Length: 234
Length: 234
DNA sequence: TCTTTTGTTTGCGCTAAGGCAAATGCCTCG
DNA sequence: CGAGGCATTTGCCTTAGCGCAAACAAAAGA
Image 1: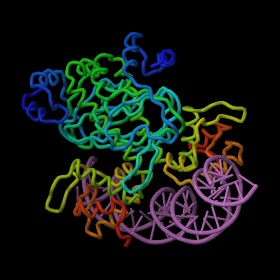
Image 2: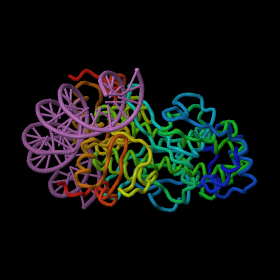
Image 3: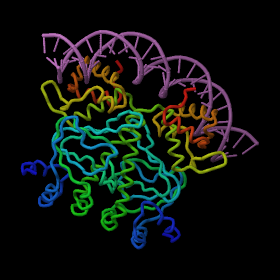
Image 4: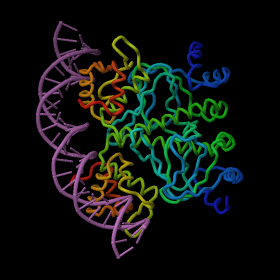
């Protein structure tokens, strides 16, 4: 671990409330790994040998069903934990994770978790908070899927991505990793066709600008109106 | 706590791997509460003062959206934990829980959690396992909502209920608490009308028998075929 | 017992959104 | 620079399932 990483890392919310010395001990036991775009970080059903912290890049987490469907569970941004199956007593990963762009991650062997949990209570508390918010997220997704129509869901997804990984540009807020219509469809439970139609319509209205694997949100506020449900049905 | 409860409780999976003496200490700090049908166990957004173990009855956990929709997250059966927000560092309950029938629960004050977690590591490990499986569940729900059609979803819901709370009768397997079409609709993201139509159709085919707030599954195997997707579209 | 409330059934029309198919445009790799 | 492969766009058709509305049935209450 190069020392320059330390200063970056210390500020992450996962490490809030952890003494510098403890942080050093935690970090020193991690391996830093570089993962090329489209390469897996971990795979569904495989033994959960490690848990990870994403330092740089973006990772897509998805689950595939027996009958071949794929659903994107979430995107991971820098600073977030992933593959923390061990904290929940699981021995295998529940999903696939692949690098959406070239990534750098820290990896700890899973067997360290129990020690970490007892030695660094803040770390485990922070981790469980993360899990709590993921559970919350998942339930929100269920609710969205149950009660909203596709337009709203896609709008929500875009806003979530903007919040997570939005990068200001002169055109608007760019989602700063490659994302296809298909990807958006897998996040919202629809088809790439429908997503394409929606984006085209929104582009005509000047709400977004989009191209190949690229989306820029121009009018987040208006998009929010759509997401919330009552946008004038013009 | 009456001692007769102990023997029942000791066998629960939440308490697996816990020494008898520890178990006593845990249980002695709980209050046993009786909750009448349709009364709340805890409520969304309220301060999470306690966490609970359901001893007897059935509890429905649901989430309401700002715009008035209600979605049923899950049913809790005897032996299951609920309201374990504190284990995830939350200070409020994320959902509503109401007794589907008269219930008996054990309640621990939330402030005990940190102590419990350190004093009884098996207990906390078991709890986190529960949370892990709930997260898994929630993701499965998202996937179902994304990829399956209503018939499949309702079939899945029925099978889940049967597994959780099925009671063998001469007619078939009865879901042993009152459940309305509306309830099933809220579990599967559809309307009571559609559920009603489906149940009627299935009743005609002899797969289920149902009445007012009552469902008996006669042919679980055939229902599974429907849930899995490829049932001849007759 | 009669009335009211609450849950259920069912018919009918409508529409959001999926499926299919073909065309177009943008990268990338040779 | 050219060819082939992806990603995207769009039109047209089909349909699952929702909304509305009315009739029914069973439980609960008076």
